[in-house]
Length: 261
Image 1 (cartoon, one colour):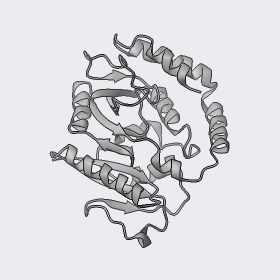
Image 2 (image 1 turned 90 degrees about the vertical axis):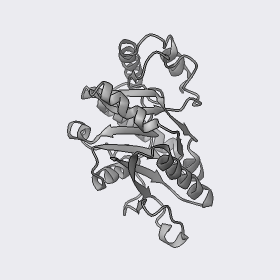
Image 3 (image 1 turned 135 degrees about the horizontal axis):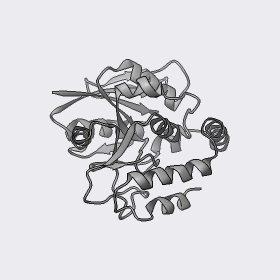
């Protein structure tokens, strides 16, 4: 049986969040009976042991002894796991049947695809015509379209080339930074339309108390210092995606970037 590690981040503040994470894990296991998912939940709530909540017997929960940092938590999860493929997922994802098999099939067709992303057909960025029905995968690095930071699967060997996730991005720009790192090291990333999930969207973060503007601006400054102008990066990403994508994504990149703040 194929074994795949899953690193899932959670901040369990109440029963609603616990139920959401439980549903994510349940849908994950039910989605692929022939795949053994080894789930590791990185829990931010240090009071977790006192709450009396428990997932299934196979799910491991680890509470890091550092404040929440999106990339650093993912690094901890990566170091605690060992399978050839590792999934990094939010806890607000519902997995549809066959999603992971579709990712593995794309890699079997093209072994150069070493970073793979499922697609949420209901996401606001997945507009009609985004993905051509004639293709099994769409190569690109456009965050929220061809690279979905809320759920992606990577070959462990990728990190020997990219290094660990950059802990300077504790939440904002974490997806953008990793997508840029993949592109820098010529590691092909692709979205797989047949690999479908539903992303419920930021339920936990809405409950958490964050100084959003301060954190965002600091991350933006760090990102600019590392990679350069956001506008130039956006233009380069559009250019790369234009040459990598097959026919069927007419104008979608331009529309998405216009929609972004």
